[in-house]
Length: 337
Image (cartoon, rainbow, N blue to C red):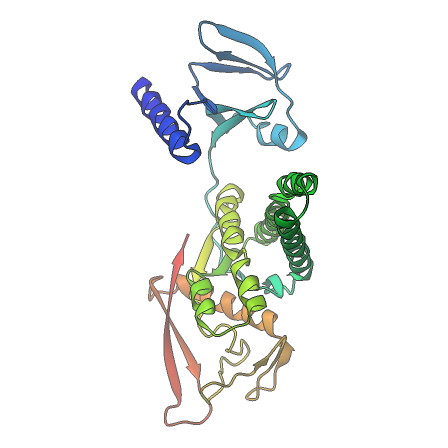
């Protein structure tokens, strides 16, 4: 255990010297384990072993959310902590290890379609619009551009004020996006937990690179590069273990072009039954929201994971109107998280 702390300390020193490029090392954090710290939950204090002696009765400013996370002492165990100084404030980052619930057996699935116009759209027709976050991104992008221009051409005092404002605004857009993804992931998992269903998501790994290969405008590239689908997927996956909900990742190919009602896709290459937010299947005449249709197709793909053929590949028979073949078989890989 002691050798491990020595290795971690050496890594932090090397990282600090490499990033900050300073000749003198200024410690930014101090690690603690169960031997060098102890908590007193009656008065919200902690005792830490510092250089030379043990300091007891250090008060902690615990907010309601943190107190809720630490409320269940029986199923949670504090394993370590890191003392960090941010400005004139000291923060104690506590690592908690707790038992996770085993996912319940179920044959029901909740499909979630991820996108930019609607951040998430479930097969229950529950959606979260992405219009607000795009407005926030555009506003902060404009502010950053104006501040950068003023910081390079203004007077000394104006350049100083612009730099101070840039520092104050740094991370506000990221924190808003993180807060929004936390709320969306919580709502999805609470719905799945209440109805005893599995959550099915698209595995969109590598989609940003594929979108950037297309000759899109600068505005479209900005929107695709700021799309935080990966963070939302990570939030859903790690919270699902806490809620006791299983998450299944399916291949996103053809999910937006397939009709969930009759499993048909457009027979002509390059054409689709989808037009923007509308989906009109010309085979069964189903009309509705395109994201709702995609979410239901995703739920159908997730349902195939538990079939006897196994979960490595899903064999989805999609009939085609016209052509030389009556149907074509799509082998869509899927995996369970």
